[in-house]
Image 1: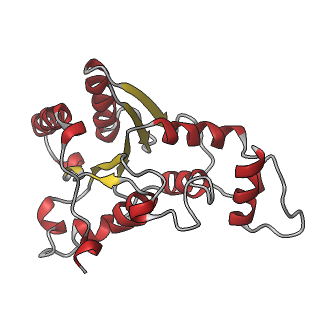
Image 2 (image 1 turned 90 degrees about the vertical axis):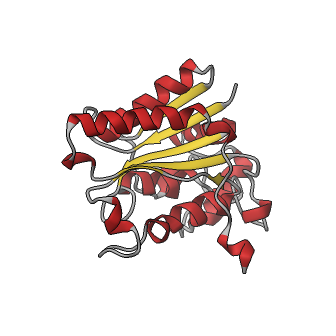
Length: 225
């Protein structure tokens, strides 16, 4: 049995993005895994990073986030809502970011969750990154819906390739902190298909979920340099 954390960022519970996230929760739970679900909009998670991140204070006259994060790490000083999310990450074997692609990135509420929860000294720093990252041995992946079809993100269409768009997440968040990223699961042009089309996507996702914990991780492009 593995511990899986799904961090979901869609404001509409009846959206297809939410349906994919709930499918993951249900299927993985039936497989015997412990699934923790952080529904950021339902939680009304505040993405703004400021002194509300902390119960402790290192420097009352100047807010430097990494200084305060280091102090909070060593003095049990994180705000209760952040401490809860941090412990979820520390406990998980697999982290799933679930979101619709907005402006070629993840929604602000999810980026703000990363900004606030992935704290310096607690999760990274002092040489703990990439191959020596704090979360070595853990896996992470993106579960995503798009507005456009796959061809437009192929590198031959009008948009940047999916690999380029997801590099800030795969390399800048997952790999940087030691996670091994898996291939993303993408529901292409989800809002423009038929119910039958979306049903096929759900079935493909269910099949993918059967072997998610044993998949081979994506190769690290930096290792080839």
